[in-house]
Length: 97
Image (cartoon, rainbow, N blue to C red; front, side, top):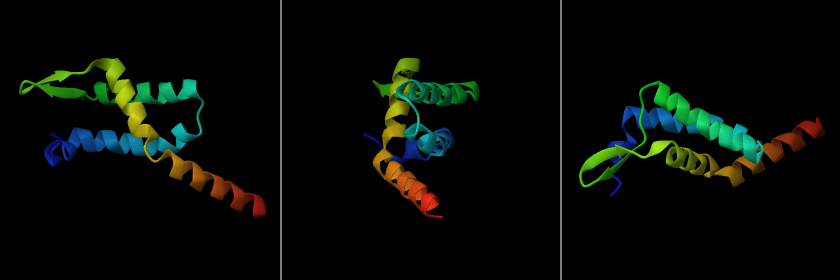
């Protein structure tokens, strides 16, 4: 199961912060650029010595770049409806001024 222990690990906190900081950019990017954003986040984590791990038979193993990119893209997509709505409202306010 998913416990809060792994959620609070400093590497996971840093990863979620990177995802959060890139959500707005992701929401306004093309499909091609969205993949580049996901890859850049995974690369940044790995360059700092981070891993993307999964537990199997009580052992951790790295899931590889492809699955890490997929998981990062999914994390970036979460909350996109609200982000786009907020961006549209901000744009409408700017046009009114």
